[in-house]
Image (cartoon, rainbow, N blue to C red; front, side):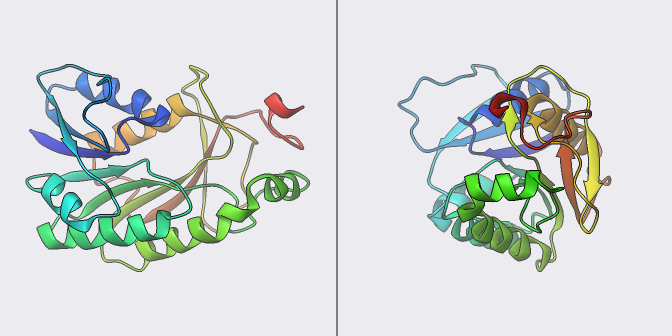
Length: 213
């Protein structure tokens, strides 16, 4: 039985990941949330909740005990601190496999004029996201970093991937497609190891995402 820890389990992207994992017979999940008094989104024998704060490394160490794979959907202007704590907590327990969501644009890899538009909208987050990605890449973890852009709740699971150093494609990413990629990696943790990947919905190239046109 694979044991998977989901950090940021109350987030919208995690809500796409969790039910897909619960459908797998050989996977048990722990959902790391800040407040267990909130309405818990999933009640299932294979879903366990643990309260904690990713800014507190002791909370992370407690949550990671006995886990095989860590999935982080965390964000925010303190993502670098959270990422540092995640890495240290994983190393403490000898956990090697990390799947972390970051953001497209941190390498100015988005095509113009979309890159400039994105930078005016969320450019302030890029340095923190870049620092978080650098921390992961400089670790000895077996990581996969996913860099989506402008997340949507569309049910589309098709996607296209670009790797670090390649120009990004598209202007938006469905959460459903991120969930599909993450579940595929969890099912076979040997794939996409030590890869930094852009993920987007095909045929969404343009100057900005559809919702902003």
